[in-house]
Length: 275
Image 1 (cartoon, rainbow, N blue to C red):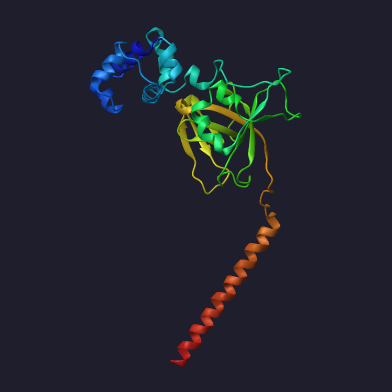
Image 2: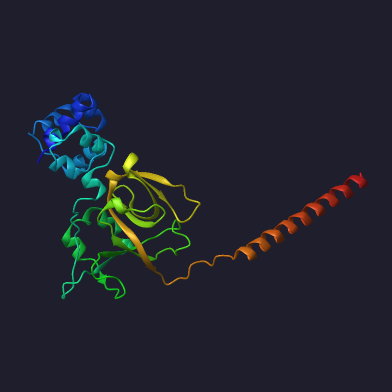
């Protein structure tokens, strides 16, 4: 493990003192010194804090000797193009299989979403999730189904079960496609993705419901990405008004508005004449 040497290397590379980093991470200077010298081991929350601070994955901070990398490799890491983060390396996904060694589709209901934030990599937690099969999906790919709440998915009904295909290599993300994105901060969200990983190490996430503003997430915050496959719901989505019907409705509203304005104008004229 290279955590101690890596955080010291990164701090000096960026020209920061121990006091600077300790204040930024809400640590005592002595605690930070202990981490850098390898006499103290951080907990998972501290590891995540360092990863966010340096815009690198926890895996990279622990497993890669940064001092041995070339300047170009370090530059890629610092721009967020992390081999572990971007998903090009093999990702270990906790999963379950049936008796015939076929991948199950685990279901993550609304009540299990909070637990998923901490148990997503725990085989025991994943093994307790309900599971099912969809015979029309490929048996060679990994799927998972999430129950998603809220109106940001509109016109997909609230409470729908959305199935996604696990994205192993994040370089395969396609702009404008729908994905289930799991981050530690925001949990499980269903969004249209704009890929800005290579330039800024970020994803821009758009809701299907245009009343919600898009927002950015740094790729170091992302833990899993699942490409949208289908959804299951007991409710029908709200009907989309045909364009011709919509034009007629707008024209009718304009006519009604003109009649109201004319009526108000006549009433004002009558009042003026009386006075």
